[in-house]
Length: 483
Image 1 (cartoon, rainbow, N blue to C red):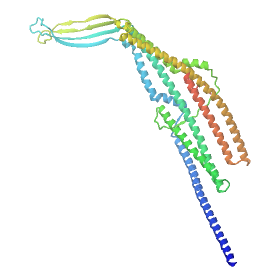
Image 2 (cartoon, rainbow, N blue to C red; image 1 turned 45 degrees about the vertical axis):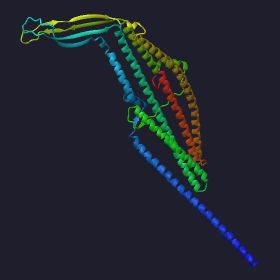
Image 3 (cartoon, rainbow, N blue to C red; image 1 turned 90 degrees about the vertical axis):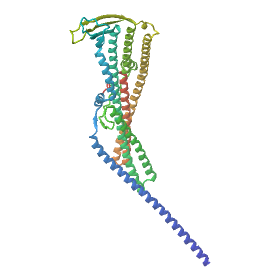
């Protein structure tokens, strides 16, 4: 019996020792896990502190760099682009060429003037002097007017019509450049507003991670809450970087558009939002666009110039031409210095000629086919004009519909902003009364910032649509919805 008691006592001791070892192992594992997590939290806090320090340093550097940026308003940007844009410079060269041709139209009436000199030998020496020479020397001037016909006068009108068409093309290029500058200006401002909100969101996310870390250490929240806060914060970083890259790309395109180096940075002035409730009559706008859109005006000018060129070609082919000529060619005979001077003989003459190439009257000849080619070109231009007008009608309808939707969206988003603002005010009052914590106040402020950003996006979209509509109507930019 003593032996059995001893065996039982030994079994109890073994079980107790096993339980103690297991407990010690579990406690050790838990301590190791807690140590690892504490180490991660310490690293996390260091990263947050480093991020905040970097943000502060970046803010200081940005403030210092802000002075180095080029400050521009939208009107200054338009003026700078009009003076330095390379694409517009090419259009200026084309216009200068046509202007010079229109200014010097009278040079078509200048005759062809030629100077000539020659020497030769006569077939027989008929001089009365014994030492005479058979050589002769001649020098003279010739003046000739060729192809004096109705085509010359029509050609003058064609040159002027081509210059007028060049003016319309240059005007369209200027308006397109202004449209592109204004739209890119607004897009940069919108992306900068988006970046500000993203930075605020990241700052709030860092604060949430800090709070979650403190609560987890104090045993007030599970590890899952901390992990969710980290994931939320880390998801914001790529989005913010995309916005920054987008701003850099837009800035580069904007600088090139203004004729500046691609790495030029700008500090753009804010714009005023005007009236978002614009009366839009589709029928009236379509009629106005069919008359005032720069593309349509340019096409009409091209058709006028093409018809004028066709008329000049027809006059050249269907009417006779007069040729006037006058020549003065004195000849010096017997140029022998050992005898008496020779004799000067004046061989000047005046001529009038009339010519008519009747091939132009036949449609199957080269001249006749050239006229038919011009007719086909004019027909294609008229078809393109009709297609352009039809496309403009559909474009105006689409833009008006889009702007009306944008007006409704702006009003709805404004109500959302008002609600978010009221929610933020109530949350702040509750925090001051001790009924809410700081995180809830920050969440309410974040919702307000998001709502305001949504409103700004819709307002910018409305302005961009208004710029496109103003271009289609051919009215000065800023006329629609002016504040």
